[in-house]
Each structure stands twice: as C-alpha cells, then as structure tokens.
Amino acid sequence: MDLNNLPEGSNTPTPKTPLKFVVEGKNFETFEQYITGAELKQLAGIPLETELYLSIAKPYQDELIDNETRVNLARPEMEYFFTKKKLEFFINGVSFIWYKQHIRGVQIRQLGNISDQDDIFLDINADWEDDLIFDDEEVDLARPGKERFFSKPKSKQFTIIVNARQHNWTEENISFEQLVVLAFGIYDPSPGKGYTVTYSRGWSPKPEGTMVKGSEVRVKNKMIFDVTATDKS
Image (cartoon, rainbow, N blue to C red; front, side):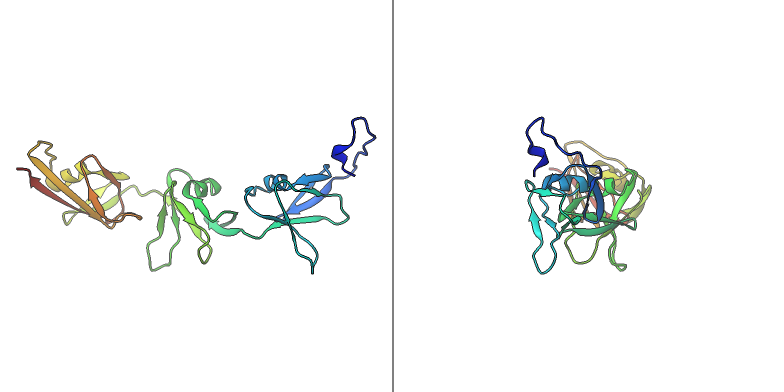
C-alpha cells in the first residue's frame, strides 16, 4: 500500500521507528516509506547523472535505480544503494570520492578547504616537476593511478632569467613592458622603437611563446626571457 497516495482523511498508520537504508556506505533513516532515485542521490551528494544501483542478492543482478524510480524502503531487509563509477583521489593526504571524470581546480580548492593564498599542485613522479593546477583548469581523474593533490603557500619570490642575467621577481605575473625595463633599463614607447620578447620554461599548457605589447604571463621560477630591441624604419 502506498502511504503517500491514500485518500485525504484515511486512517494512515503512523510509523513508530524510522526506516534505515545505506547509500555509498553512509547510513540514513526516514519516516517516509518511498524515496526516489533523485532523492537518494541528493542525500548522498551524488550527481544526478551518475548511475545508482540497489544491491540484490546473488545470483541476481543489481537493480539500476533511475532518478524517477520510487523505492519501497519498508521491505523486510535494509536496502543498500551504491554507484559503480566513482573515482578516488587525495587532497593533502585526505581521501575524496568524485563521481565525474573531470574536476576543476576551484573544486579541489573548495573540497580541500584550501586558502586562496596557497597554490594547488598535482603530485608527479619524484624525478619530475609537480604540476601547478589553476582554479579554472580541469584534471582528468580517470587516468591510471589515484591523483594526489597538495597545497603550499604561493611563492613570494622568483628567479627569472632575462637575456642570460638573473633577476629576482616578487609578482605573480610579469608584463611585456616590465621585461623590456629589466633588459635595457628603460622602455621607449616612441613609434621608431620596437621590441620582441620570447619566453621558455613557462607554465603548461604553453611553456614557451612570444609576448606582445600590453601582454603579461604568469611567472615560474627559473623562467627564461629573451628581449630584443628593434629599430623600426
């Protein structure tokens, strides 16, 4: 009998104890006899597009629960719900579960409660440089192995190399004009004067390239810049 569809005024029994069920290893309870797949996902923080299953005793197959499916929780045994597609990763040593293939840097920051004053890195093999993850960057969690992210305070000082000379730099970005000043001591904006600026050993996905007037790039420690003055005829 569907308690939610009884005529108004009917003598509806009042349950004395809640109905218990489990979603992804987490215990829940309710006084409602029926619950939908969408409600189960919302309770457990699972995206609606993720497939959710009701555990069925072997040798029978587990039951796929669609978002609109209504499940009767008052059956004799406790119901167990689970997902088959989930990805585990770590933030500062703490395990997290994600139900999508990709995760953005800002979501990692929020999950790990990481301050805006800290950078987020993807731990890479010890022989290689760790990968800086920007807030608007997407990371594929479905690659082999479990991704391990960590945070550390943003660097307050960088060493950059401009025309083979080392300079200390304390800002996150550097502009075309600032590089010209570091190279030649002055930036001449007159029409007859021009400059070319190239860089290498920068951040992915574009570790090298050419800068133009008014542009800037994010600084990386030991980044290399070549600045050339050109006279326009």
